[in-house]
Length: 78
Image (cartoon, rainbow, N blue to C red):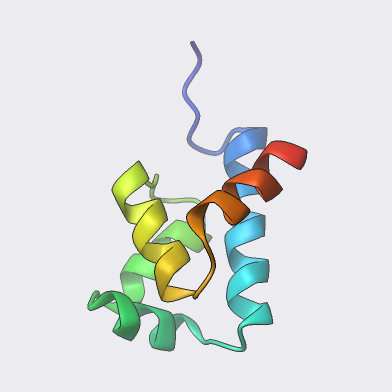
């Protein structure tokens, strides 16, 4: 299996996360604060420099106040 970092699917996942954050009217800093992580954590994810694991994906979804399954469904429909 080829690497997924910066793949088409990875870019789609990032786009979904960024759009969801913006729809929630949150800055990267505000999302990072909710995650108790530095702003650079969110920035690196959104820039495609960092891959997410499942635990981080769920934490981000919850911080965005969206069910993780809803975000995953958006990704599956991409």
